[in-house]
Image 1 (cartoon, rainbow, N blue to C red):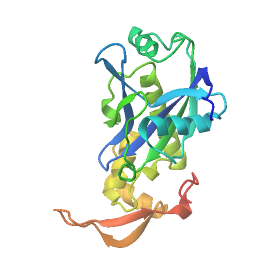
Image 2 (cartoon, rainbow, N blue to C red):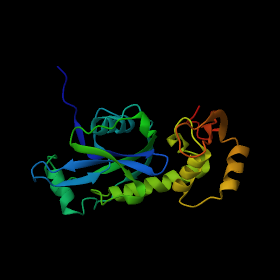
Image 3 (cartoon, rainbow, N blue to C red):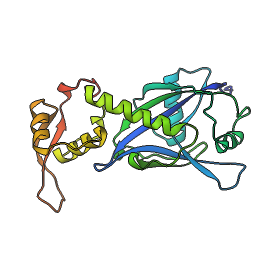
Image 4 (cartoon, helix red, strand yellow):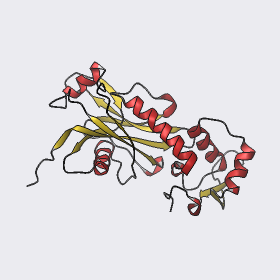
Length: 239
């Protein structure tokens, strides 16, 4: 007979999962219900407490799986959040009172981020998540706890890692156009890029490999398709 895991009430993991739909950069959010407070809900990042018997990385993977059904995703730890005033909003405490024995206990959260190809995964809500959905990072609602702060920090880390290591290109489909690639660059870097110079640069630096294929099923003139060049991957994530 298995014993119930022991929860560490002072440490949690929150996950910022990015997805790209060829037009927008999205983040995966959950909708939490107030079990004892009628139909009240709030949106949040997928997160929960760590078990005493597991590592932080194991906890992040388990929490994401339990709340969203996403499994086998590489999660990168990027920052720890430990403000003693993380429960500044009364509604956050009200939600915790529905699920925690000691809702006012100070919790330090270790934040992770990840990238997924949205077509490869089917998020599904479970545990205390009533709903799981993708949200445009340019239109993030007010989230529970300090999750807006965690979200903003994740985007800044993504931008820094993207510029230095090209981390984030994994968001693209396996085959893509240069327009889709430029769109992703512009969204992450938050600035417009000259089309001609951009195309010359990514081809010269061997960021992509051209394919002998073109788009299918489009109303406009089909564009050539490309794939990421794993041999030119500073992050090591595409090898």
